[in-house]
Image (tube, rainbow over all chains, first blue to last red; front, side, top):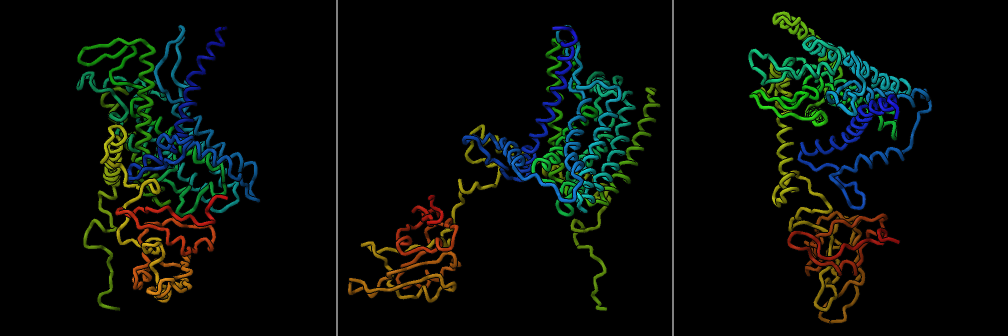
Amino acid sequence: MSGVALDLLLQAIPVGFVMFVVLNFGGLLTWVERKQSAIMQDRIGANRASIFGIRILGLLHPLADAVKMLTKEDFTPAHADRLMFKLAPFVSVFFGLTAFASIPFGDTLQIMGREIQLQAVTLNVGILYVLAMISLGVYGLMMAGWASANNYALLGGQRAAALMISAEIAIGASIMGVVMVYGSLNMQDIARGQGQPLLPQLFGNWIPAWGLLTQPVAFVLFLTAGIASTKRIPFDTPEGESEIIGYFVEYSGMKFGMFAMGDFLETVVIAGMTTALFLGGWQVPYLQPSGFVFPWGAAIPLPNPAVAGLQVVAFLTKVVVMIWLLMLIRWTLPRFRYDQAMRLGWLALFPLSIVNILVTALVLLAVGKA
Amino acid sequence: MPASYQTDNTPADPRHSSRLGLRQRFYVVEVLVGLALTAQHFFANMWRHTLRVVFRSKTARGAVTIQYPDERRPYSPRLRSLHRLVRREDGSPRCVACMMCETVCPAHCIYIVATEHPNPEIEKVPERFDIDLGKCVFCGYCVEACPEDAIRMDTGILEFSAYDRRSMIYTKETLLALEPARPGGGPTSPVPIPPSRRPV
């Protein structure tokens, strides 16, 4: 095999891994949503779908859903803008899928004398890329709202746009603090920075400098704004079932399913972003590229593939925990009214994140890192 | 204007007030309190599910769900379920066709045709005894009114839906064949599936 083809093949590994993980997480989240909400509410949850009597805890329900949605009538309203109407769900899912590309899920893997970055796309401006993809996702919703030729859908699309703007600003502004602390827009650099010890003069090598510890306020702000950008309860104003059905009111079958899928993918992306920026990314505590180096002096050397494997497992575990937390929030809090969501975004999250930037800058100046 | 005109909506207990205090307005603390509550339920139920599935505990239940029709909760002994006609020792109905139940029935769902009984000591016997369960309101007046204790509503059978009204009419033979329920309320005799629900 020629060198170029091998390079391409090796580069396809992380890309394929990201695609596989994100798509499957998106599909599994329908199951997680049903089961976790059921367990939180002392219920059992959907467990009846079976193949030859095998139920495996209701895991076949996503499959049954897909079959149901694919066999339903694919309805297009008479006055709809047909092209835009059909394009909208694909736009929504596409940006949800691509947003994960620059989130690193491991350090470097050495195979056959080559170094593979465990990241689908290595970008110097990875954070901006993810932000851009999350923001572009709202175009699908606006297209759906406009193309449906339905007033409620239009209102939903408009609300989605307004919510996205107010959430995006808070997301961007709260991330700035993290960017300032770790001094890079490259998400791989930020993940590596979180492996450094926090305040070594004070704690020695005991505590890694995860974003959660260096930027706790930004964590809360980012999480809140991130939940808002997924358009799920408590920020489900664009698709509030109880008032306007929202931008997908005219959609049926798998197109509706794709909008629901888009929401789940955004949940995965927000969980991945939170992990990468605040929970140390792929960092395992005390795991260095050469193996475990414990602060009390012990060391366990590990080969590179084992280190990379541990990092990937750690990243996925953190993402799962974050998804659990997002689901917990979604099934705990009541929904905001439209004006309350706007008020929270513009009058609480945005000013607080600006204050966070200022305080971070002052602290960095004081400790002489800037 | 009446003197007791209410100008203030504040209830006595501040927890029920619609006016939010500083802590509620700050929101984050209250959110954490709510999340702690639901997370507590989540972990407690997960633990009980683990006990039941992994450690085969019989008593641990992670959910209050009763998976009807696989599981049923015990019925009350007073439950009024599908009627049955009580039999004599020779298998003939104990009913003497006195028409009390037909008369008392508020829904007019009982239809009796009386005939002579071969035994001269017994006055009459129903030739037909039909109950239209599509009309029945399960008030139990027929059981109360019966002087012979010939009709009871203790079969424990509750699932006798049908696809058409005619199938909801139960005849004397069907009602005579039914048995009383078990102590837990579960039916002992097979559910008389109406003709419209039988596979063709």
